Length: 115
Ligand SMILES: Nc1ncnc2c1ncn2[C@@H]1O[C@H](COP(=O)(O)OP(=O)(O)O)[C@@H](O)[C@H]1O
Ligand SMILES: [Mg+2]
Image (tube, rainbow, N blue to C red; front, side, top):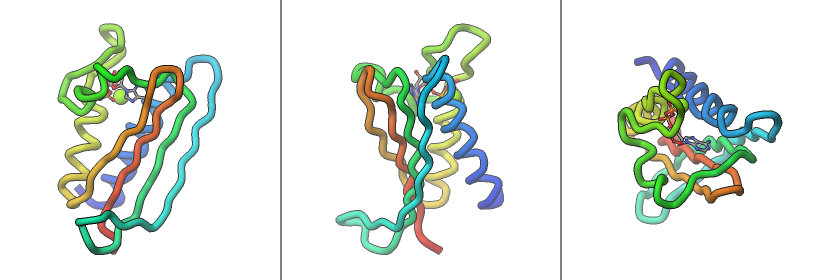
């Protein structure tokens, strides 16, 4: 997959999840920044997708990147959105961090090697 197509897919999947987590109304923020990570060296670009939605319970958090894992009703969730994000980002030697708690929204950070 071309880099631009891949990044579009990553952004769409994360923003669709943010939408689903904010029925009615909410706040979606997309940010970019230069970044580095201790122990990884080199320069990275960080794309952050943050929502003010329902948040993710701690017992669910470890499963969200698994293929076919979904908490959505049958017919609504495929459970493939985050697995796809993970695959695309890994393929580019990046990684994904998540911060979330119930009622406190969710923040997904995507790190990619700077080009
Ligand atoms: N922004 C978010 N806020 C709350 N929960 C989320 C968010 N993004 C993902 N999740 C949780 O992770 C699960 C897996 O997401 P995903 O792989 O995109 O599959 P799907 O959206 O089809 O359920 C979702 O069902 C939901 O429980
Ligand atoms: Mg999804």
